[in-house]
Length: 422
Image 1 (tube, rainbow, N blue to C red):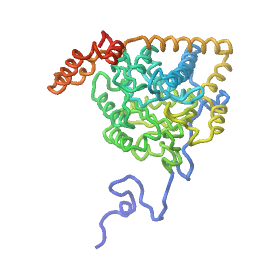
Image 2 (cartoon, rainbow, N blue to C red; image 1 turned 90 degrees about the vertical axis):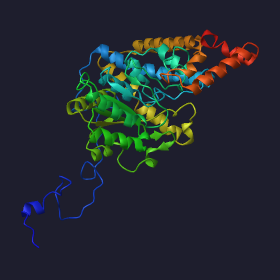
Image 3 (spheres, rainbow, N blue to C red; image 1 turned 180 degrees about the vertical axis):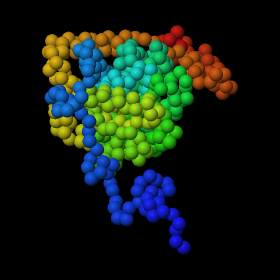
Image 4 (cartoon, rainbow, N blue to C red; image 1 turned 120 degrees about the vertical axis):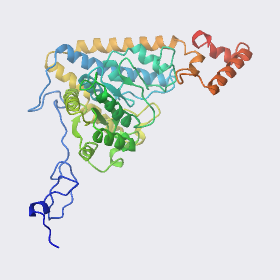
């Protein structure tokens, strides 16, 4: 039977897609055409000079100082808290960014500077800089790391798992990638809120290792098919703990996955704080104006170990790490830019490093003297009405404390470290 449809319809688009029908069989393996790699957006070269044609953001000397100080503060925090863990003063420390010795300051601070302070942030482990940029104090950082009674989570979170309702920073969760679909839900909630619609976005940070989890795809699918202003920020630092990129995926990084979900995507040099700031600022604008998800992949390198439980020289060459740190350090790059503008000199550098180290050590020593949360905090903040089993456990502990608390030396010593003696 002959078709009655026009010839143009027969050779045109298929019913489930807008792509044209063609007669030549051809496979493809690139989202850019011609098999080329996805480009990497950059503003400053490795020596801090603007590259040809780059749009350098108009920032004041004061704002540049703030960017640089926050990057150096992250480096100082890592250095001192890593030492504190090695000394046995804190039980665990996951490097917040991997800094002057480490390497990811620009991804965190550049992103923080481009977001609104009341945008909702769902973090992984290395975004302490977002909190600091928004005014979270060093005492607040130390309270969480030590788990004392000033900690908003009352000592019930592992170190570096911060959270702050005041600063719109959702509590970090240890399981990898769980925050990604949650962010899509937060973005959808913002879109439904008349007071925050077209005003705020949800922003989620994650590493390229987390992007191998199913939660990454669930989050991208939700935010693209049920459109929401959700900004996906992937930190591609080369390693998922000990697994290099070459063993994580075969395709062209994380950016290649964005078009598959119909999501606007860009790849940016994560060691260039100005490029990160430009990219995230524009991505945020697209999120708000389109009410849809946007993906930014920030390319960097994890110079330091994954955490204080990791020895990265067991799976990569020390020389490779040293070369990366020497040739493309994000702090050095931005300092050279500031010096070229006449905004920074060696005297400023030494004064800043001395002050930051002094302030971090002061906060560390203070946190060590603050009492741990009271025992009653073990049973609160979960249920609106205390269920029978929690009440039973609380009463059992109270009975044991009454019987042994003042006569058994180990309990006496422990109770003395708690707020109000337990």
